Amino acid sequence: MSQNNDPFNPFDPTGMFKGVRDSGMDAWSKMMIQFVNTDAYARSTAVLLDTWLAGSAQFRKALEAAMTQALTGLNMPTRPDVTRLAERLTHIELRLDDLEAKLDEGLRAARRAAGPRARTPKGSDPS
Amino acid sequence: MTKPEVSTPRAAELCEELRKVAEKARTFNRLLTTDAKVAQTPKEVIWTLNKAKLYRYVPVKPETERHKLPLLLVFAIMNRPHVLDLRPGHSFVEYMLHRGHDVYLLDWGAPGPEDKDLRFDDYTLEYLPRAVRKVKSVSGSDGFNMLGWCLGALISTLYASLRPDDGLRNLVLLTAPLDFTDKTAGGFIRWTSDQAFSADRIVAAFGNVPGEMIDYGAKALKPVENFVRNYINLWDNIDNPKVVEAWHAMNTWVRDIIPMAGGAYRQLINEFYKENRLMQGTLVIRGERVDLGRLRAPVLNVIAEADHITPPCQSEGVMERIRSTDKEVFRVKGGHIGIMAGSGAEKTTWPHIEQWLAARTD
Image (cartoon, rainbow over all chains, first blue to last red; front, top):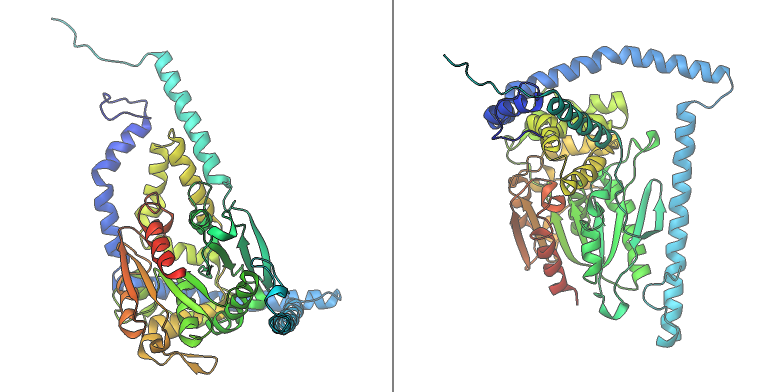
């Protein structure tokens, strides 16, 4: 690592960089923060992003259609097929969680009715 | 006439200098391209739903020395929650466990294409209540404390307002983006408030918003700090193992980006950032209007004074609206992540949160 009190060393690129950096980094940082917080920057990035999204939409659509056609031709599930399957699994998980909650509630009610000696110790999952 | 003395490096010194630079470059490259071991505190999965997982950290204190109320940590939906358990010796989770808290963490997971329609409605009223039920069931407690960070704090606030009787005893909000009245406060709100910025088009194009896009947006708020100074600081301190270890762990977390569910992104931009519905009192979640006045649990609102992602004004305004009689704003010097994961967190933010909760937990 270069030392600040070292004489100028032409073979230490980090030392040269450090000197430049130390003199201007804070000012550069402040300037950039101010720049990205301007309405002009906000407008230009929004327009750029929007233009890119609009421009690439047709390409994405065509690619998706071609991929769906190819997968269907090969008798393979397409992206929407897999997505639908995953959604169904999540719904099943939700139902299972509902059942578990009901079972849990029932067990707790039964324990309460049985009295304090039958209660589950803290830290263990009764379900 | 004598010749002025010119100090020229000898060949051996030059070689040594070059060798050191090469060694530093190798270490630098390794740190940039490898992952540090993060989130190492022992835990077990006690509940899952879709991509979400609920963890319970293995308590380190005997039951008699533990606080009665469990603590549920709710992190943001567009980052991994490992930052709460960054590395051994510098982990909020570890800190709380050693002070007798029974800690649970809700990890939302990375949404897949099938989750592109997930909204805050789902996170708040489908996932979170189920996770809360499980926390109560496993801990054997009817009440619980909750700590939400960033969008996790937003979800926690919605939940606390919609389900005030679910057993929530204390709520800690960290850098919570809730009030979007000031459209000039910070880069995010400026960018997304522009007429040309369309969250609908982004979601239509991608489904889920790519993690790279969110990561770039967050870094672009402070471009020189994030794209230049971050690496220069590492280079300068590469011989300091403590700094290197901390940097590596943080960089591992920063690099581990995940997409954000398209529906939630659209809602965040349109209903929160642009229309400020939560503060206007017009936000409707699954048919229920969110009334902050129904939030009655004690609230600790932790604000980062130099937060460029959630400027302080986005967190402060909510305190007037909530009905809790026991509420406190705690301002910490630092940035969005730094107040909880920075080197000073263990001396400022963590003890304050712990003491605040401990005083209200037993």
